[in-house]
Image (cartoon, rainbow, N blue to C red; front, side, top):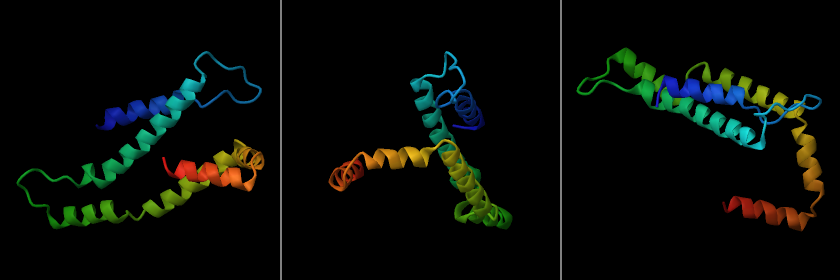
Length: 130
């Protein structure tokens, strides 16, 4: 689990779009399976980023005690680097813009309107049990 794995996951995310954009003829590899592959690879990629920061970057060679600078960096990796919050805000802003551009809210609201309150509560409670 290292940099090569991350590069491979990044390539899978980049080259397996979720579906063909409206008005663009679908290429052979733009299938529902490619969309699922895209989402799975993206989840694994971001999980690996977290593993790098929370575990791999904090490793110290066996039998060695970390020096003061290493201990300070380890705390930053564990408790949030100074850049963590701006990165998080930027990622959330990008995610929201992506959802707006993809009309996700319209799709969610449209799907929700198909169900009455009882059905919707049943669906949500069923999903919470998973």
